[in-house]
Image (tube, rainbow, N blue to C red):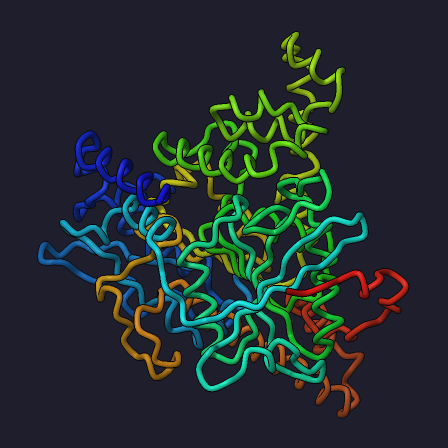
Amino acid sequence: MLEWLVALCIGILVAVIWPASKYFGTQGEPDALLQGLGISRRQTKEMVSERCVSDRGIPVDGANAQTSDGAGENKVPDVALICKPSALANYLFKHCRTFSNFTACTGWTWRASAFLQTVYGACWPYESPAYFVRDYLQLSDDGLVALDWAVSMAGASYQKRRRTSSNSTSPILLIIPNSFGKITRNVLKLCEVALSHGYLPVVFNRRSHNATPLSSVKLQQFGDPGDLREAVRYMRYRQPVSRLYAVSESTGSGLLLSYLGECGSSSYVTAAACLSPVFRCQSWFEKGPIWPLHWALVTYQKICLNRYRTVLGETVHTDALFSSCSLRGLEEVLFCQQPGPKGALALAAGTSSSSAGAWEAYWERNEPLRDVDEVAIPVLSVCAQDDPIRGDPQSTLPLELFESNPHFFLLLTTRGGHCGFNTQEGSAFSGGGTFGGIPGTSWSHRALLEFFRATTDFIAAEERAKQAARRRGLGGSSQGKVFRHRSVSTCKRLPACSHNIHTIYNWQRSYTR
């Protein structure tokens, strides 16, 4: 009920106060956004060709990347792939047709509004045909996280899928929701589509999120991958021969990028994708999104934390917590203040210098891009220029990262909002036979599934080529050296369980519901 009231209030605010031109784009709005990124009409095709061209000289923009209008001018493409030139980038262009098949909604329709797309995806209910079976994993410090395995109720018993054999080769799709714990329709639709493609989708719920019991007074910091690392090892223990893929939504990308950076080539993940990620998280917490969305996020987080108000009072100043009016204020009270009387005195005295120092130290440990150079697998980021949550693309998109790091790929659309990406065709999805025939499949979901498939095929082809070269006695030649220096060579399949996992965790302490 609360979600409906929030959606109604925000909708009324938009309809009465916000200028219609702010949301319902005109034909020239994409040009302004691209020019803000240093891309003009005439430069668009060159930009994509120069940044995303393989060593064979084949550009990775779509066949319709540049078309002519009635006046003879060139239109800006609705989507661009920004990445460092590599063999993998060339392969993705050839085999991922969805990358160039995005037609943004325009005109006077709610699907053209970045704000309404975002509110619809976050608040509108969705009756998913998937059924979720929850596993509670007790961590090394007695904390609890929940793993929700999505199973289909049609034609199979969920109990049978729940106890999947460890010899199963079905790939696992690890889904990390936003950092506020809200399970959106975007996550539910992704689970449904992944099931139809043979994946085993599992949603990772942080401590206290999505009705997960808070068994300890410790909450997970924004970019602390410790809990996720234990969950991944548990999944590897349960499914030792399955490939693991990871998808994050919104601010949940901070946790995924932190995990990939800290673990490097030992992440056990084959490929990853981030849907509408927030990259510069410290700045985002300090500035926040536009006011209506900022207020909604703060209110939702307070409602979720209010359930544990009594137990949090042992380590957190709850009065300051629930009187905070910003995302930064909530984060500071939860993680940047000393517990006990000393913290209360510091809070009452208002020592801004010590608070600022603790805030900076907090983000030195939690900034998602702190170890980005250590990421050793292909990562796709799907972003829209008009994202109202992330903010201005000039200051929030690290284009230099995608232009210089061969592991990162950016699909940048002119429109799409935050995790929306509605296309001109509407909710219907043409070509459903290829993707299981599920109507209403999001363009971003099709893009990431194609990315996973193409990346896996490329790695397998490279491994076969390397094995063939070794059989011919060319393992020490320059051809072998070229392969070893390619960015995806670290994505090779790792041993299923190279350590004695029983010496690290007592799995009998993990229990299920």
